[in-house]
Image (cartoon, rainbow, N blue to C red; front, side):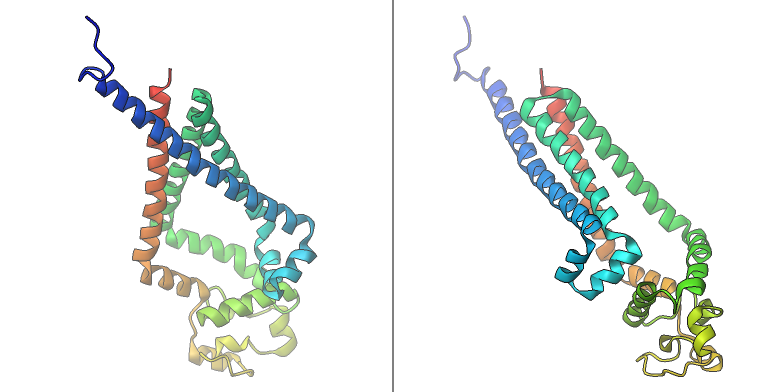
Length: 254
């Protein structure tokens, strides 16, 4: 004699189906948001890369330095493309119950998760090595561009003013730069906390011993370690949850 739909034997299967349906709906909902965010970032990135002057008019002069220094447009395109692809794979995989799309979604997230862990380990273990590498990369650029390249100079001035620092390591980074060659003084930020001293000689800079921006940045990160760690842990937890959900849907699809 078969079980009726409302019998105890039939309930677990119904509950499982309801749970599967709920998780599937949530997967579609959240990945739709990710998909739209990725599309928005992609659109802004393309706009910045193709029509930079219009972007600068909207966001003001500060964006000019940032765009030149970090290539914001390309970064936004890369980040937007990743989010766009992830959102599409997760949404399509859950909606169409496509195992291939869900497995791809899981693998891409897994690669990102492993890369983030590797980056965190490298940042913790090889901080000194990273400093040496960045010194070899950034200091020669300062000596070549500071004082001659307007946007580069403006970015460094804003950085030094904001972090109350001088150069990457210290004032010696500016020796031989176009600014030092022309004025025979160092940037004012290397001699005074309030950046009011415009006659920053080598003797004055040596006396003040203003710290480099790299050490100031590290100090700021360590001071806010709990906040930074909390954000990183939150992102990692969301990625793990997304991987678990995608694998659950994958395993329960026919």
